[in-house]
Length: 117
Image (cartoon, rainbow, N blue to C red; front, side, top):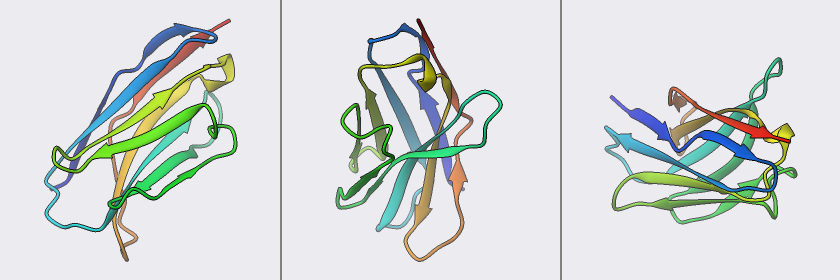
């Protein structure tokens, strides 16, 4: 079964940077999409960025220019580099995985990111 484990969250000051990692296991097929989502306190989960097997990316407007999603296919790992962090970026960040042409999403446990002013 697919399992996703996030790491790299923590407490940072506004303007700082953080790099999140997601290690995937149990992946047996190619052509998939990794994603990062986040859930701010008291809000619904929202998309941050996605990346395909070939490296095509999409970003939410709030992430564009500040966040960068990347992946290492050889190690089945996806990253989220976050720069110029703001207090409103405070949230639990989740890693997601799905195979192309599938509506079945897999989720990690989440990692807390807190940005202080």
